[in-house]
Structures are given as structure tokens and as C-alpha cells.
Image 1 (tube, one colour):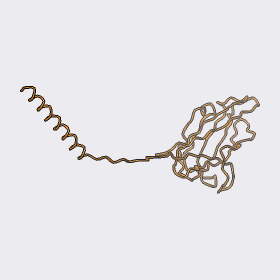
Image 2 (image 1 turned 90 degrees about the vertical axis):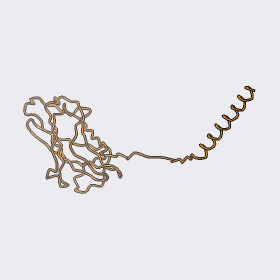
Image 3 (image 1 turned 60 degrees about the horizontal axis):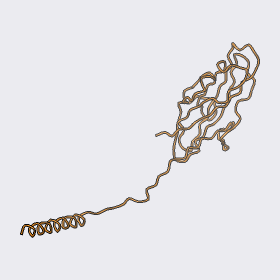
Length: 180
């Protein structure tokens, strides 16, 4: 008799558990948000040394400053940076690279100033360091909206303390970093 009661009790519990499971299954539902895809913006910084106020030719690399400078003298080069991206703006930083030559980099000062399209009036702050300090990236303090361009004045000054002849060769790498 106890055996029959236990079997009956087991059957009742099994039927109850099945009923709860079936009821729960019939009271739940599922939806799927499928095919989620995103892509990052395309950062594309270009440079031009065109003296036009509306340059149309921009590339990844151009030859920049090439001139003679005497101790205590400053020479100026105008160039453009363009945010060739169509979907994001970015802030700009600069860094000297491949510095070589007989002139000590600490005797060469490089200053960058954002200027108007005519290259005359400053439209932002000047960032200036000696060539040896520019070996680490530094912000130019400017941003360029997507599709926009900005003209810059680069001033190269040779210290009046330089007493030997020689040259210095250097590149400048400009980096555009996405802005929020």
C-alpha cells in the first residue's frame, strides 16, 4: 500500500512538473535583433603645399621646407591639411621624424600656426618647440571637421648660437584623431 501511495505521489508530481513546464513555455516568447553591423569612420588626412587659396590636390606626402637659413634667421612655409573623411572630424597632432644632419636639433625651432586661407592672419594658437622636443607628438590645438581643410604656417628658426655650417633634414608626421 505504501508502495502504491509512493507511485501515485510520484505520478502526481511528474504530471504537475510537466504542466508547470508546458504552461511556462506557452507564456514566454523570444525576439531576435539580428544582423547587427557597424563600421568605424574613415580617418583620411591629406597634405598640400599649394599656394592657392582653394587647393584641389592633396596627397599623403609632399616635400615641404627646402631653403637656406642663417643663424638667427626665420623662414616660413605655408601648407594645408585636409580632413578627407566624409563622416568624422578630428584633432591634429604633429611629430618630427627622421631627424638627421650636422646641426643640433635643439638649435632649430619649429612653430605651427593655423592661419586664414590667405596665409596671413592667425586663426588659432601657435605651437612651437625645438626640433628635439618635437620627437614626441604634440597637439596643434586645432580640429578639422569632416571634409574641411586648414592652412598652416610653419616657421623654421635657426638659433643665433649656431657657429658651424651644415644642414638638418627632418620630416613632420601629422596625425588626425577622431573627435567625439
